[in-house]
Amino acid sequence: MSLPARTRDAIATLLSRASVAPAVLRLQFRRRRLARRYLKGEGLEIGALHYPLWVPSGVRVRYVDRMDVADLHGHYPELPLDKLVAVDVVDDGERLSSQPDGSADFVIANHFIEHTEDPLEALANHLRVLRPGGVVFMAVPDRRRTFDERRSPTPIEHIVEDHLEGPARSRRVHQEEWARLVEQTPESEVAARADELEREDYSIHFHVWAPWEFTALLDYARNEGRLPFAVEELKGNEHEFIAILRRT
Image (cartoon, rainbow, N blue to C red; front, side):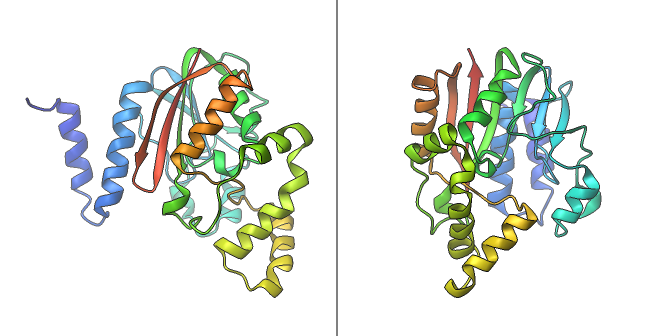
């Protein structure tokens, strides 16, 4: 059976990038395949920075970030300015307070939810702005296959407590864990490094998961949290896994 022309073209484009590692090509191809299947109409992508998700022809995306491009470049000087996507909406991606309820067909949030301090609130707001039947497309780092490999999964109980009592209660713990286990800061300097992260408002990975651990969080959000969604897909993709949530 021959492949559709669009699929052949996508493969040819990816393979033509000889300098890109095979694992990255596989990651990109799987993202494209799911984007083609699930993304329609118009929606939002949160925190795309220099790596926006490919979307099918005719799909309209507005890019959301907490800063404009100039400020993002100042915050992430390692990212080339000319590669950053133009920010259409300056807003907190956890709250999306500028976006009306039921106003989007999709929300793309790749490598975003691990940066949120209140993942349950973020999920609720991503679902809030969707029309019925709309989808959240999220790629999440697999903690076992990234620089988070030394970290333990975030317990659901911790996430629920942060949601109920406010995430400020545990921010310092996360910043010190990041300094200690990701940046491997010497123990005598961990406190000072956590102070720097707080002053810079640097967007660390506050939470980490493997696929089955994230599935447990989604189960909690849907059952105990009463969030209106069904899980269409949750599958591994190299160093990440992709979850497709459909608003019910």
